[in-house]
Length: 286
Length: 286
Image 1 (cartoon, chains in turn blue, yellow):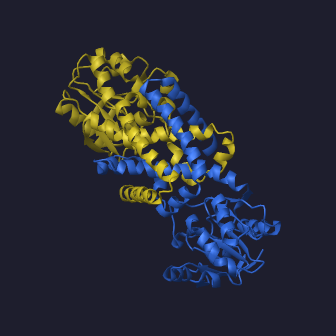
Image 2: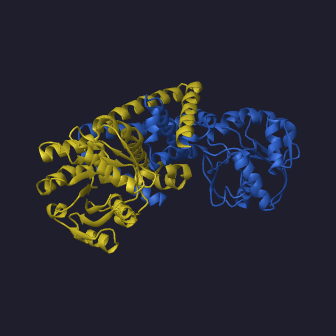
Image 3: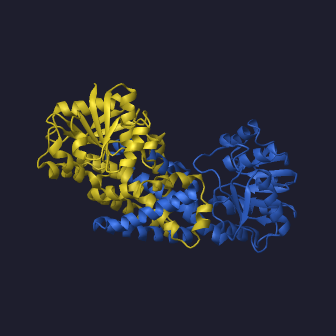
């Protein structure tokens, strides 16, 4: 598969790494970067991530075989509205949004109807690092990319997007947007919410300096995802509300049972939960 | 400082690493290991971690300059009761328990009164790994060790324990048992409880295999501490109940405000919390 022109809207870690990966694989001829920030685009060009750039999204997608949108999910509808009138009939559009039902709703709003060439996607890679400077060609090697084709997505468009990700070494799977949002709420969105919440709780204690001074390696790992981009996670929480709140409520119920067990010295229950958790974690995460 | 005989009760990662570190520093002549499990002690001897061993705790502490107790905090009172009648007047006793008020209460119960030679301590190192096979001489290098001397602890005994930890490269600080328990509830006990709870919540979902399959690096880091020893953490939760429940309630309140903000589309509040958390985490954890 050779892409003559790939247009990337939002040239950060995710978009930049796709550009570098496709280039390394000889799978793209020309990469056009687009965003509102011209200085940022100049830097991406200097770094060799993109060949050219456009600050006007309409002009940026002209002549593109594939448009890859890697912006926070809260900006998705605006981007889709801006590019919609300028897309050629055969231009394939895909994205990297962390929530999928909301991106599909944004596309429906922007296009009036879901286009056959629109294939929503989500590469499971990279969180707390960001920025085009961190972009590497191997970011997606061995990583999973979830595609959530709509009922309107054409098989040809899905194949094209699948081939693009396979060219950079990713493993592509397909599922429904609803199922994606449910699973990601569990493994990504809720953990981020908990990490942000815990660090904020501690940061508001009087002796916060000392609290963090006494933190060991386990705390560092546990809170690493609280260094993620606040704006991006603000968007995710608001755009996967139903699934996230459902998962949060399950967790809160379980946590309150643990609280009760501690208060009542019910050691058997604690041991049961901790043992089951350790077994699951050891089995699945190695 | 040269210790003629160090007796270690509970020869795992924590006790074994202290033995190896002191030996590497030339600070100990003879290390006696003690536990109920003779096979385990034989392995520790074969590995060169201990010189001799005893399964009878009373005999194990005879002739010791320093006794180091590295058993789960739930076993502390029993161990102290067993060794109390056999300690020489000048034998210094210290421990590695993760909760300190409960260990002091155990000592008071075991000895009748708090001995001048008893200096409670807690090295902040190692969690999800365990076992004497993992013991290394450098485990404590650059790590913090918190001593919580009682009102009865003699300055000479405190100095002795301080010197022991400094010999293996640790940074020693002193605080009260209550303050230790409050700070550790925040940075260690609550995070472990949350990690166990989250993994268990997900492990009980119908599609647990798939849930874990889709987990990325952030989830792996976030849940690493859920691979810790369930029995040890059962003990810690029950032995630091007051401080842990206080911290859990603060966290739960904050989490429920975040839930409300998501449900009400209050993006400003989410952005405020996430930004404050990121800033704190970046400042304190680098």
